[in-house]
Image (cartoon, rainbow, N blue to C red; front, side):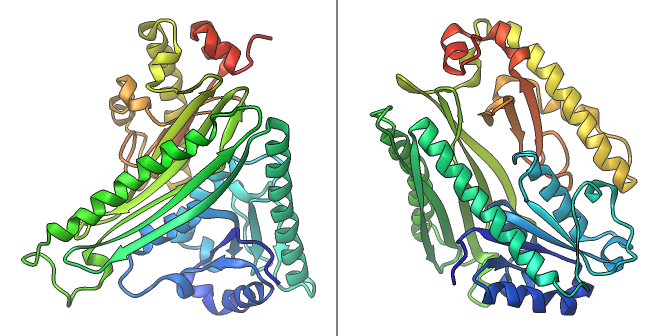
Length: 385
C-alpha cells in the first residue's frame, strides 16, 4: 500500500549501513517513501547538495543512533543539526525527528534527550516505527485539511522537472502551487505569480544551450560536475490573519563549482486586497525607526544560536563581525515569513556565518513589531486585540 508521498529521510553513520538498510527496505516495502544516501545518491552527484535537498523536502527524519555515530564527528551530526533547526517550524507535539537506538548503551546527545526513542533490538521495533510514521503522516494531512477549511484557502502542488545533457547541461526541478478560495476570489493569482517567477529560472537555464563551454567541460566528466542544477521546493503556505506567505528553499549548483549552495526566497501577500508585500520595510510606519530594532534583536538571537552550536562542537567563539555585516540594510532581511508568533527572518549560508554553520533563523515577536507597523498590517495580521 502507498502510505503517503511524504518523504522520510534516513540519517545514520556510514559504519552502521548494514544494520540500517534492512529496516529501510522494510519501510519501502510497507509503502513509505524513504530517502537514504546509499540507495538514492547516484555516481558523481554532490552528496552535500543531494542530502541537504532531500532533508529540506522531508516530512519526517529517522535518526539511527549508535556508538559509531556519536563517538566520532561526521555528517550525521550536521544532518541532526539541520533537522533540529527544522523542528522549530513544527508544532510541539508533532513527530518530526524519530531517534532509533541501535546500541542500548549509547550516550544520548543532550539535543535529543527530550525525544522518545525506539530501541532497535526490541521485538516490536518495526511495528512501533511504522506506527509512528503513519500517525504523523495522518496528522500532517489532517492539520493541512483543517487549516484549509478554517481559512477557506485550498492548495495543491505539482512538480515540473526538466534536464538537458550539455557542456554544461542543466537540471531543473520546480514545485508550483495552485490556490483557490471562495473567500478570496483572486487568490489563484498567487499561484500564477509564483509560476511566472520560477518559470523564468527555467527559461534562463534553457538559454545555456546557446552558451556552451567545451573548453571547460567535456563528456568524459561525471554528468553532475558539468550540470547546472536548480531545485525550488516550497513548504505549505503559512497563514497569519489575512496575510499568506510562501517560503521556497532554493538548492543550486553551478557546474564546476567547489560546492553547492542554497538560499531562501519568500513571497508574502495581503489577501484583501490581494497585494504583494515587498519590500519588508514597506510594512512599517517609519522604516528608519524599525530597522535598528530588528537589527538588534536579530543579531542577539543569531549570536546566541551560533554560540550554542559552536560550544557543542568545541569550536572557537562566534564571529560577531560576520553577523553584523550580514544584518546592515533592509536588503539583508528580504527573506521573511509572517509566522504564527512573529516575523521569521531567514539567513542562507554565508549570509551571517560560514557555510559549515548552515542557514540561520531569527524570530521578531509581533509584540516587538506592533508599535512600528502600519495600521493595515496590524489589521491584516489580526494584532489589534
